Image 1 (cartoon, helix red, strand yellow):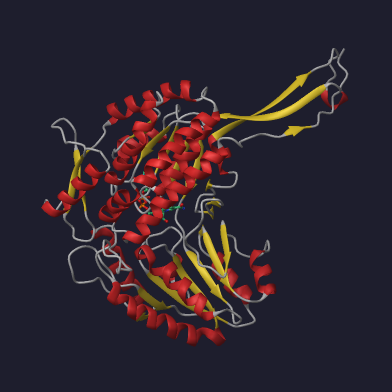
Image 2 (cartoon, rainbow, N blue to C red):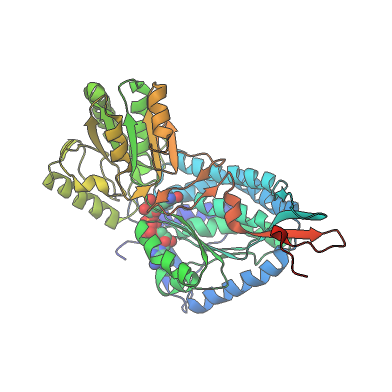
Amino acid sequence: MDCRMSTSGETEIHQLFTTLGLELPSATSTRDTIVTEDPSSGAALARVPLDDLASAQAKVAAACDAFTRLRLEPGPARGDLVRKFGARLRAHKDALARIVCAEVGKGIEEARGEVQEMIDICDYAVGLSRTLGGRTMLSERPGHRMFEQWLPLGPVLCISAFNFPVAVWSWNAAIALVCGDPVIWKPSLKAPLCAIATHGLLQPVLAQAGFGDAMQLITGADDPVATALVDDPRLPLVSATGSCAMGRAVAPRVAARLGRSLLELGGNNAIIVDATADLDLAARAIVFGAAGTAGQRCTTTRRLFVARSIESPLRQRLVAAYQQLQARIGDPRDPQTLVGPLIDRDAQSRFREMIAEIQRHGGELLVGGAAVDRPGYFVQPTLVRAPDHATFPPIDQETFAPILYIRSFEDDDLGRALAWNNGVEQGLSSALFSDSVRAVERFWSPAGSDCGIANVNLGTSGAEIGGAFGGEKATGGGREAGSDAWKSYMRRQTCTINGSRALPLAQGIRWD
Ligand code: NAD
């Protein structure tokens, strides 16, 4: 890897780990290592040892052993582990956010929000640990009682993406823990320090309760380490977050062993703005949705469909906002910065290639369109007018960068905007800005948005943990976090007890 060891980057990470009471892992001569870098400078932050197949197997065995004990621990006691973890996150929120900021380039304010999301899911999971329950059904047989109970499933493999390097694992880990499942975490190798720090914060809580082996962290290569985990029949659930390409590689392997997958894959999210919309509200939501996190959220707004009569005033507002944004690109540690870097050199190259493709297909660059000439992997937030009627292949793809495409539709043709909204392979998030109750009902109708998230008068990103999070089609169909997402982490058992002295058969069958 072509990056210089940076004294300041190394020192910053060292100090943050010390603040957390943790030590950075030391590289040994027997382990392969990777160097993790600061995307806002390209400088090295730390050298991280990797797991090989043997160490990964040993960690899976330890998690399986922990499961035999964790599943027998009362639910509220498992909830208490999560409560204590949440307390440690509260105490160390700022330091953990600074590690996220340094390693993935997320603006410090958004990084704090990511850690807050971890705290929120812990609170939620603690409540769940006393409320998880099954239904009681009426039996057709006299003297019989029927009910269902939910039992721990087994060790969960959690594969996480770089862009939410701590929150997405915590959605899985907090819920899995109260459900009685150990978690084996395979983080992105673009964000191993975030994982090591998070794991280090949880570990003392578990160790004190005799469950020091219940959560395992495996920093290993996709091939062969992650692939072997995906194939491992001891892991009944694979919860994988990342690109559609990753899902297409992982899902068939899990299916081949008849395991369960919970997939949280890519998005190509749209906002529709109709002629009745509040344009100030819409403009603010669009700019945050499209340029926040430098366009590197799964829920980033990538497409904008605007009613013809308001296209010009909305476009003018967006152009003005995007022009102002160019002055707010910079070091994500600075609270004044609104747009940080892309994750790495490859991401910057993909942005450049996409800009060339946009121009080749007749897209008009309204603002931005260039990489920023400074160390690190910065690009300009970019606004593109896409042709309304011609096919325009760039708009159908998820480019993980701050590129927003605008198209317009006739004011009385919401159906066309909905068809565009649904006309991509992914189905994660969508939003409508409208003051028309008819338009809103159409957006939410069975013929409306086909996405897992459908918002009205707010943007596509920034979900709360209380709702089930996820999307349809190539987004993978998984649901994490709130609502009844916990059911993915448990097995359901339907139980019937006969309290009578007779043995009536169901459906009235006589077989004497
Ligand atoms: P990625 O697909 O490159 O990697 C994601 C994770 O999968 C990493 O840990 C990676 O090591 C692992 N992985 C990749 N190929 C694998 C394989 N064959 N077997 C096992 N593991 C494998 O994604 P990324 O670049 O880290 O993240 C960006 C993508 O993630 C975007 O597409 C974004 O939309 C998506 N994402 C989705 C959600 C969601 O909730 N829907 C959330 C965050 C990110």
